[in-house]
Length: 112
Length: 115
Image (tube, rainbow over all chains, first blue to last red; front, top):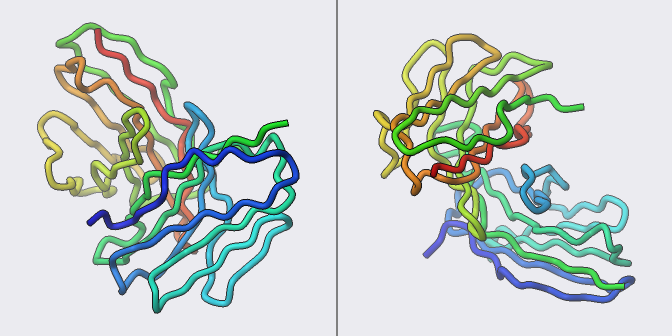
């Protein structure tokens, strides 16, 4: 089983749609969780951290369910510029501070 | 602006040559930096953790004699791909995080193509 699993997609949605991505992680002791965005042939960029209480940043909402070891990202009112690959990232804190485990990524394509 | 600088952004080389990639933290000192590799349509895979003033820690399956890491200062880590072969062609990305906080910042990546 992969340490961080995501549905690779692609998700093809029209502009204005709401889309949700899910991610599961295997290490129950994981401490920090993030969503990164990666554009084609570019480096990952932090979209948002994910907190236990859930958090929102504009059109983006992230949720964490520790009991189910499940993370989600909701994008409302999709824009063409949201097209990218979204990476679920976990810091397991297993001795090596800062070591990140990346999911495969979920590809989103927003169509006009 | 970028807080982690990576150079070069793109390298084409002949099989058998060595390639050095630099990663610099611009606004902070980083005792630890990370080197990742990403093949097409795959996730980033951690190759090694670069530790300032000591040996790098390599992930399982990564050859330390092939991927030489040097972290000689608090703002610079280098990755040298020695005797590169076509199968080493990949996207190499470094990252670092400031002393406070758990956010990592990534360099822009280096696309290596070995002919």
